[in-house]
Image 1: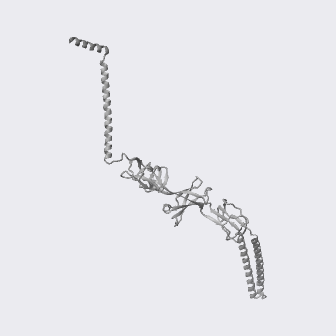
Image 2: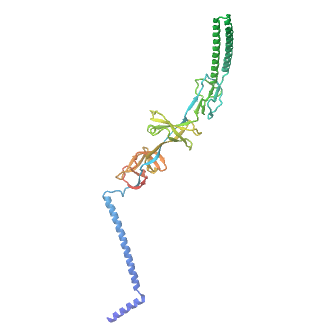
Image 3: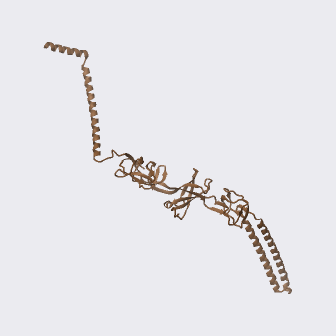
Length: 397
């Protein structure tokens, strides 16, 4: 018994001294502690995860379905001061169109020295009518003046001689009165002849068709050799001063927002150049058929502004307070423009809006919103009215 104990003791000491196993047992003990600590951390994470899931399940069971609802970004538009405007279109026309026709007895046109598109001055001859017959009549009338003047001179001489003889008793006072009357009649015939001659000259002058005012010749509807008369249609059309206007057609509500003097930007069809004008007149009548009126916008002459053409126009209406939304928030379909708002129950509701001017920051909403609503910023096209959503505030405009 003692021998076995001694052998075992000796053997253990020999092994320990030979292989130094105490260090290995220490390293193994540390490894076990590390493994145990890692297992505890993993267990804690799993416990937190299941606790969170159980809490969400309890919430869903209690009736809150936001975990299943789609998340949408919402904004509050607020009110912003912007420059109001109206966009429409209309026809270009001469602001003061002057049709020019035959004012005399007419006849055969012998010359037309002007072309359409040419600037003319007041009194410039646009066309001449043959006056060969009228010229002979004028010569005859001028000769009648000479005859009348000769008769008047003779009558005056007879009267002068009679006045010298009346004092001697050779001529009676009655003869003097008769000669005085003859002299006065001769003078009257001179005045009549001169008036007739002046009338013929005026008639002949009217055979020249002249421009009543300076401006741009828009139409020329006559050629040499053509016979014209006082009943003929206008031969020429002149834009007085070359001034042009745009006849903008607007509804009653839009006309109520305008005032004479507000500025407008006009862009002719087929051109990317804009022209600045101003509303100079708002016509006082409304078309009973389409309930529209006309705002007349004055424009200076420019070659691109051709009367009879078509142009778009943006009319400034002054500053207004209105909500402004990003383009992504405003949707359109066959019923018009609309947005989705999120109500107090977090349900998406469709709201029809009327859009206004497009600015660098978004689209102006003229009506339909007061700016306090929560507006779906994006993905509104994937929503349906009444659908529950999870709103995420994305900022205010």
